[in-house]
Length: 467
Ligand code: CO
Picture (tube, rainbow, N blue to C red):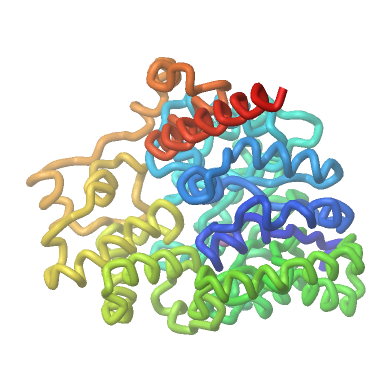
């Protein structure tokens, strides 16, 4: 066991992403930020993942401005983001110069810890983001190499230990095991963490899991006993279900172990008190679906992460097809096997989930194949962990068709994407951050910037009239 185990608070990113599909506006949580700043967390995960997309698409917020406001309100806390390597925060691969610029701007706007992962654990896809993090690092910057944890015939403890050695060699500062589906058992946590600790020595190990299947508290307990350094938790009101284990609960458990975690009891309880009425508001508004709050031991079979489950429920509801929920859930492992056992994490979780829904709704498997699945088979996402279905590959690429190497395309540094985006935006863009948002989410960003312009013009008119 460690002498000290620290806690990352996820309420502003993963907890709200998993429970309420990332619909928490800045205005809802801004007043608690000064109190959170006193809590003594290892870090606060507050940006990246789906927050960027959601800010522009649903909340009418500038994600960069959100980050700067959080930074200003929490000067003493390390702010953490989740970055999907070469995908950044979007759903496709970007060129290396775009990835580098994105990392530069993230650090410039206030991010301290960049947790970088690739959905397929194809580490060629996280190398550019790592190098950019090191290039633009301040004395607070931490590059965290993250492994998408999943279970399959091709994912063994030995394989994970090898991956961790590689992350160390690449130059990452910490290693995070990301169990997005919450399917890691206590037994597996013990074997993994002991194995990894033996292999990488004093490199800090972080465990990120979800309560989806009910395993998380037991898994964290074993992880604590096996030498984990940091655990991800969410304030009680926004914990459990598809979210993380509760911060306060783990605080009291660690206290009984006699392990300090550096948290201020008064502050973490105040944070929880703040989020309690918000949770009720989300339940009343239907933003928080009771299905996301329960324990789903079936996920131990289907390996479905929380965010994916809440998205699938939302999609099926939109299509008035909730009666197909169980059938779609059962189709997921089949699609996953056909794709060579990719971990179910963004964007692969959406890809596998959508294709499973299509297969069920069409009444015939792969009658329709999504563009994303086609691109996956073309090799645009990287190398699949296991063997893909030969029949499906032939159907998509033609007989004897072979996937391409995604890195050849990604490594181009043409500067074109930036120049094109800047030109497309014209006077709508006021900063490099605006241009970057447009590169990641063109339609949403354009709409957002147009609305911003109208608002600014209204304010200008109003001010003149006032004068
Ligand atoms: Co997560």
